[in-house]
Image (cartoon, rainbow, N blue to C red; front, side, top):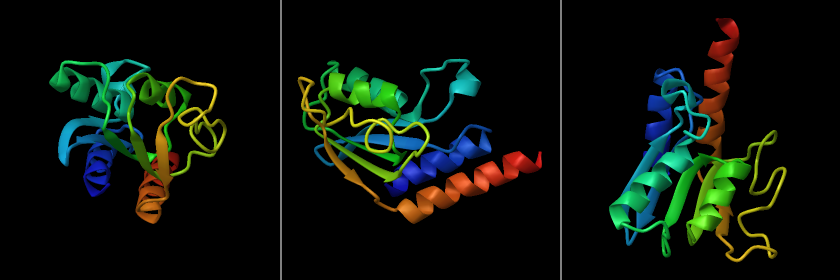
Length: 144
């Protein structure tokens, strides 16, 4: 999670909402992503999606069984769906997203019993640091 926070801080410096994600398989980071929909002019360029894309390309397979995705913020509905599609084994996230959360706050997509795959979800890891990073970012944005 500390690596995901490091990536999130870099996103903030780039003017993006500070969200970072990594994919870990067998103890090795195989994918990294920083939120960058503004810089890439791509509404799907969320940190989780970018990390999954890199990990899948590296694996040569869209299925990432045995993978853990660490993310500083609760994934949205799109990203939660991508986790299920990629067959990610476990999701670890820091802060809940009370407005758009697709895993716990608004929807429970990642481990829904109506889908063909359930992701094991762990929440609240380094939550204080994750929330503080978001607060600082949005506080600075409001001053602009």
